[in-house]
Length: 630
Ligand code: SPV
Ligand code: MN
Image (cartoon, rainbow, N blue to C red; front, side):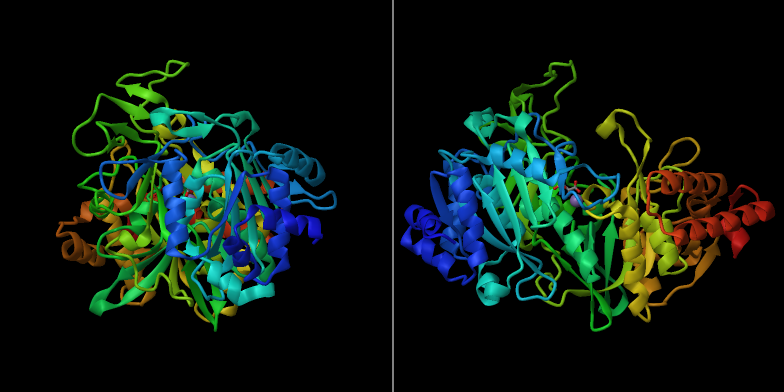
């Protein structure tokens, strides 16, 4: 550290803020901040610690800097991202790859030296006229073996505010760890801004949007974007760093919810669940009557011989589209309470009211949204209708505003996991719930082979199956085969590893009718809870273990007060041999061409499954009722 550089922080910081940095007793932190202050040249710097004062300052700055506007309900604010900045930018998210490294063809990479040169050029003086917020957080609970300390540099008060809602404050852990803090680093700038709807500022230079990931230095750069998935360092950006770190240290970073499912006699069994986007992940995590630990990202470790997991986050950045009073009572209620919530990219109308697509109640005809002034039937340049809210419009709140938050959310030891769940959007192949034969069979046939069908809402063309192993494909930072092997190896040390299940909320009959109601998912959860405690028996099929009719019938009555007929059961749990064989064919194709490092065991397990399906077909035909298999 040269004295000249020390001076820049001394010069630009208040004495109080400077002392906050000295208190951390870690010269790497000072050097990191100095380096980017020198490069980005912010006009003002604020160092935030855990204090209420700093948290309030961040929240107030988002309003003062016109990144958020107040809404009618106390605590509620709205934020807009630019019209072309509404989702994760996969094309411009790249790994900085050193010359001597190869992470496989699946990844978007750029030569590390070239990428650094480019991003430094973009960052040069980028914060001129902006205030830099320096924030300290923890990924995971405070004071926990699971957790990773993080420093976020951002010139967006909205990003800093979002992180205050989504993560645990980490300043004290940095003080505790001192020189030992092995932290992740995030550098974000919105770049130049322009005035958008309601006079709120949005990014001007979307063409210079970059998200560059440096696994070597565990640092991520994000520029000229505001959308949370691109900017909130601790969310999907940190996930890439954590997957890489976990792979070296023999634990798992998963794109998973964590929830407590309530069984008989007040028993609670914890599950993690991976679901690609639009497959029911958040709605599963928030089912009333169960308890939520997390809805998006889980760290999973071997703690004294048990599989335990923590929620990396302590808030939710959730999709708001379609949330209504009938299907989502819990989220509906919370979204109307006077608690701190940031709404992004939905419709603002009537001086502070909000509307989102699918919201129960009055549907305004005009207002302001991510496209500016909005009116019914408004079209974009290409003639597409602009709906009132963007389909990726979101809410951000702390989990403690939910009435069913699990009491172990902040437990440094996490919760013990009894089952992993994998759920895709699948109209015709897998049954609503099924248990795998064992860990390896589950990781391979249910996790690694996870697919999801596109919805009309997302791509225009419905029913295209997208390969998404463990629903983590967008966030992997190691080759897919290696990642699958890490998952397979993880359970080797456990006498009884968690059971692995698949769920499918989207099964249809030949005529395209849904075979289940939205609310049925709670039944599959209750059944899995009974299974992990060995309370119920199963029917063995070629693809796994499925429930017995009598157990489901009882659960439907007990939990939903609903009659469940044998016909329902047979339709839902018929083994569909041709569809299952097609799936195996698709997977064999993907794993032998697209994935370059597929472990042999994957092909072996798929071939065994194929043989079981063919043998069953010879005996019972193409569509097999569970009653044939009992
Ligand atoms: C997801 O898309 O999986 C999300 C939202 O959780 S984002 O932050 O964009 O990743
Ligand atoms: Mn996610």
